[in-house]
Image (cartoon, rainbow, N blue to C red; front, side, top):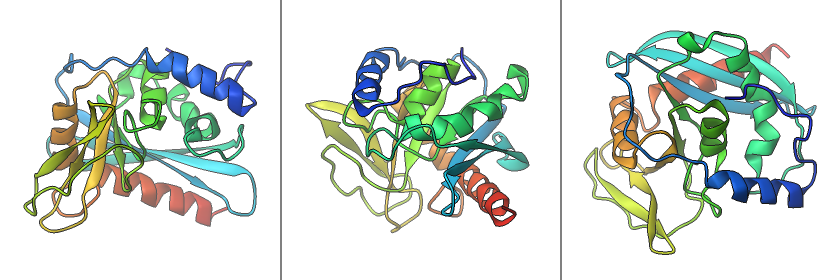
Length: 226
């Protein structure tokens, strides 16, 4: 488990690509090994006038989906803007959220506003975070990144597989009747079916999970105070 950026954090695109391909093999897709009493949401936003990032972690009771608290941390971008390598840019602001509190207080499952296995190298932000923390993480993104998929049926709960190179890497999930689907994938230590269930259960009213909405509100409030 690591909650710190290592001194040899990649500085170039080639270094990041090499590490990403290596770490993708460390993602564990397995049924949850715990009863879930709390669930969290993670979001990251940028200060447009600087190279500063704000990350937020929301915490909810589960299955009631009652908001308990949200916490934020700040960091500097440690990597240039390169599509597909966002985790190297954003994790310096994210990891302090977990370093500042005891592991016992981490949400049992974390829903990350970003992709997991739906990624050209099967290693999006949710996977990177999950492997570093050795923790159950779900990727939940608003937009399609890669892979082939078909529009799911209209009713809430319908989903269709996202497939790349013959492998199912995630799901296009309809969280509300008739709204655009969101894209769910494994980050670490969870199955796709479980990930779909948690995202759907935390999205009782809106397209995005309440966990993501709370984390987004927290980063926006923090940026407004900058």
